[in-house]
Amino acid sequence: MGTEEWTVVLARSGRKKRGFQKMIIPPKMLEPAKPWAPENSENDPERELKLMGKMHTYVESLQSSQFYQAFMDQIQRSEMSDLIGKVLVSEEKMSMVVYGIGSIESYEPPRLQLGLAILMKKNLSWIGDVEVFDPVISSVESKVLSAFGFSVLSINEEGQRQASKPTFFFMPHCEAVLYNNLLRANWEVNRLNQIVLLGNSFNGYEQVVSTSMLSVREETHGHIFAVRSFTKEFPVNTVSDDYFRAFHTSSWHFFNVESDADLQLLKL
Image 1 (cartoon, rainbow, N blue to C red):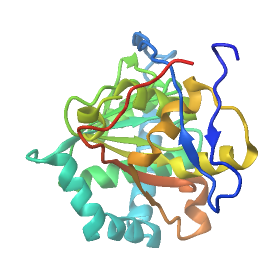
Image 2 (tube, rainbow, N blue to C red):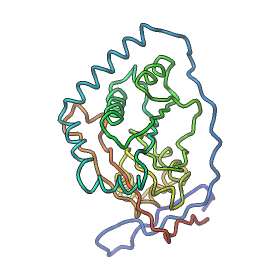
Image 3 (cartoon, rainbow, N blue to C red):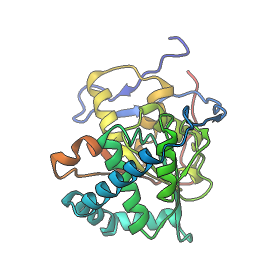
Image 4 (cartoon, helix red, strand yellow):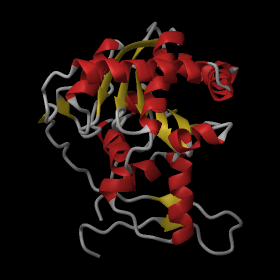
């Protein structure tokens, strides 16, 4: 097998439940962050004002929706509330990092996703400063994000932010490689246990690959599958078709890695 091919080892036939027994992954150095700025930096107050008005409308509509009520009810249930408290430990707040929000000026799902981020920042006392990045963000969108109190990153971290303190990552419908990069950058007990992640269902990735018997490349899925045994996942209920496109297959993920857990990545 070449050094770039990776295989998921499935349970032997005869067992009732198929699943991942072992994932063999080589260590890989983190890529350096790349400086970034919007391609078009020209001011356009009219577009900014129009987009601000549109976002306020989306936030108001979202806040009064059954989807948002169900979303907040889920967070406030004791099991999830306890897990959030376990990540915070003695901290009052955790920083929030939003990756992959997309173009809020061009598409509705990113506006709904940003609207949810705005409401979480407003209504969840444990969320602190919020940073946002997507390489497609325009100068107009960057100014609107800033007006809502969010900081737009000036570097492309490619998902490789290391959690040196409790951190909430909101990564709506990102590519698998970004989730994998995040896990790889935090592949040690203390860092994983300081992460709360809201994004694509890891269980969903596992089911698709387990069913299709596809080989898995380390750079796109390896760490996602390797972390599953340490993950507590809570699917988000989209409630209605209005929110399906923006939030389908989304889940909360919490990582509970014991201090003696074997996270060593072995080379083929």
